[in-house]
Image 1 (tube, rainbow, N blue to C red):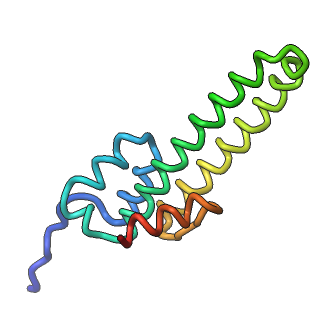
Image 2: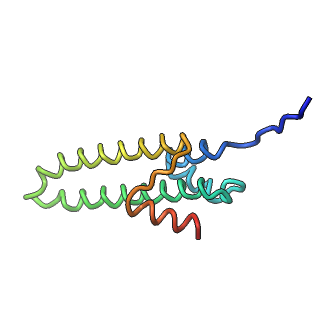
Length: 118
């Protein structure tokens, strides 16, 4: 009977998808071997981190612009729509990562690819 090689740790797809759950697993996968040596896991981890940073910057921007009286009433609706769009984008990249597909977010994906390969 052939010996089965026991699998230790997560598959690349599972690690890539989990990198999007929060920024913490993404950072862990960039630090802990063997995940930090796998380009696909590194790409998704970096893209997750950059998406998180973009979300924070957008959130702070809405807070600042929302304090201007003229824009205050429109910011609530715009903030809701942008938040929904970011949530849908987050779901798409996470599902694609779990399925072993690489979905590059414009601009963020290019930065992630440079970091993952460099």
